Length: 172
Image 1: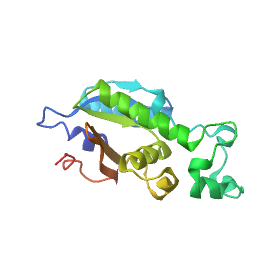
Image 2: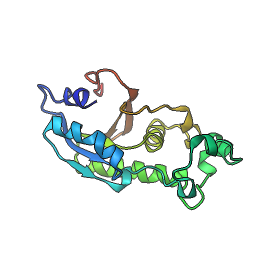
Image 3: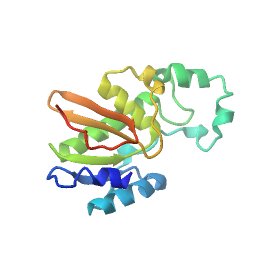
Image 4: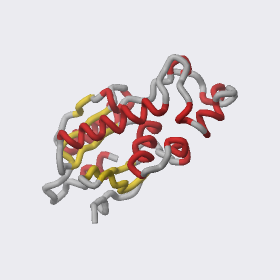
């Protein structure tokens, strides 16, 4: 992934200018090689953190899938709050606010934000105008790239779950 993102800067003056990551170690591990390849440092941003799963944190997915609430998580996430944690709507608002804030800190520039699957899917859904209740239909694989351009006319989804070259990421 680091090489694919670094290639965005090759021979261009508009390559990534900053790398942000959720404060969780697994995102820092992904962000460090990206930042190094760009000659940048990783900046931590709490807005990019994983959803707070509350009492469900650390539980096996197979066990959670047996809970009666699981169908709500999958089919009506906008109406669900993790016991002792946050709701999907709160997570989406936090994530999209963080991305908007980072875009405002670096107007017209490319920023790398390393986060987690559900917050990324929620941000992509919001940018695409897709209801939160449909965000589970998106797939975000580890080390894939999803890109959103924040413009004066609103966000534009450039790619989702990409594992290919990123050279074509431009706004027409």
